[in-house]
Image (cartoon, rainbow, N blue to C red; front, side, top):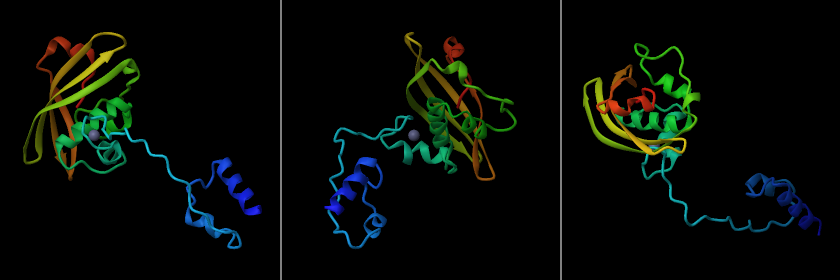
Length: 180
Ligand SMILES: [Zn+2]
């Protein structure tokens, strides 16, 4: 009786609901019970913000947590995801100091909804790389737009940095800030 009350109390309080090892070790006089079944969402399909069919945590998330991108394409994807998540610090940190703005604020982009990313090409020559991509977005309730950019990247001390970008479709270049 006492054990059931204690168990119910833990569950209701929201603590120890996973019944970790330490939970069973608190009072050895209480009988152990099987943990409750963990609910599973059968329709969850992992997809990163950058479009990869992988969970964010194992795709761009690991770069946002400090892991260095192995190539410019990975950095480009991580920077796109950073725009989606409005990670201004990450965008500045991965922007080469020679072209990086003194400050970078995405407050003006609050109404921008990113719709997807298509990578067109990735070329690397030594410590330089170029990535062409199309980013699709919508501003407020406006029509869907797309922006083609050819971004240049440089690697220094083992870390890739966004350098600058060209916008072949200048007609829509006003719709967003420079990005990589
Ligand atoms: Zn990603």
